[in-house]
Structures are given as structure tokens and as C-alpha cells.
Image 1 (spheres, rainbow, N blue to C red):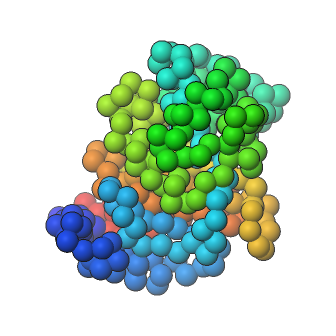
Image 2: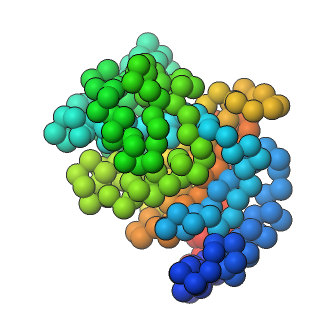
Length: 274
């Protein structure tokens, strides 16, 4: 049994009897992360599968816009409005407002999640009833960007959609709880691909192949000191039956770069041991 597996077993046994910060796992995880990742450029939340906070350092836990971390929830809202049917979209890169200049070519939903393609999700947002979407977002504990939100905001390109870090983290746990539903299962498959070969591939590189589910986001920096961007990564670990959720924000980098930090953090807790 790996070190992380042993600690997870302890955490599961004690979770119902103690608050998260009183368990041996949470105390040990907090100490390890504080020692190994002291940078003030890093904010993080570590949750168990029930949404309890096990470790945290988020200096300004005000509502934030996390870039492409919103895309799975846009996809779910779209699926609910279109009978679970999704288009194939051709991404032509810069001309379609995608982050990849040359474009991704033709994508389905899973590959769009894996590659975090802006063009694909702008297409979905254009066909979304905002009022009905707000009802979907509320089911995940999210306020959403408002009934007059632009397609860009719904796709994570603007700063209108803001939620607290804890709300974003718990929304992903709710998504995981619904992964047997058709759209949610496709989103989860895309997150598996993201960690293995997509924008979050640094996570599996630090752990092992198919070790995690992940999604990245890049957003305009919203805190002091201002940087060019903030990189976000959410990781659900282990992929087969997630028991931990890690949300990180790294100042001054892209989401793909923040995935390197997230993978290293989980590895420091014992993840990836064989």
C-alpha cells in the first residue's frame, strides 16, 4: 500500500467522527504542503470526496474567475438543453478565439474538454438559454455569470463569472457524483484525457498514466501583485475512484504550468507510488 493510500484509509475511517482539520491525514497533508510548497504565488484547497477541507492556503478566498474551469458546467447546461446531443466543431485557432494559434481541428465534447478548446465552448455558449443554464449552475452550488452573460463569459474567457474557490471545488465534486449521467460521463472522460495527454498532462506525468481526472484554466490575474495571468488546475485523485480533490492557483503562469505544481503536490503526499 502506498503512503497516500494508507493516509486515505485513515482519513476515511475518521471523517465521520472528527472535523477535517482534526484528522491525522489533514494534519499531515497540511504540514507536507506547507513545507514543500511555501511559495506565496501558490494558493490551494485540498478536499476529501465529501467536500471537507483537509488542507488549504488561499490568501484571498474572495470570488474568482478561473478561466476554463467553467467549461464542464457550460457543457452540462448545454447537454440538458439539447437532449444530450453535442456538435462536432472545427477549431481554426486564432480566428476562432482559441488559445492554440493553429487550431485543434474537428473536436467532439470529450476532446474539447481534453484540449480546453475555446472555439468549441464558444459554439456551445451561443446556443444556450441563459435562464435555464442558471438553474443548472445552481444545482452545482454556482451562482453563474448572470442572465445577460456573453458567450465569452460562459466559456471562461471573461471575468464576469465569479465564485469562491470552495464553490468551484465542490461543484467538481458534485459533477463527479453525477458521472453516471450521459453528459457528465463524457465530461469526466475528457478530464481523464486532459490529465493523460491534454492541457493537464503534467499531472499524469508526475503521477502515472490514467492516475487522475483534471481540468486546467488560465485567467486574468485578479489580486495583488498583478501578474500576466493566473493558472488554475483542479485534480480528482485517483481517477478510478477519486477520494481527493486538489484545486490550485499559481500566480503568473498558464493553467498548463499550474498542472505541473498540482501533480507535484499530490506526488509529495504519496501519489504515484507503486
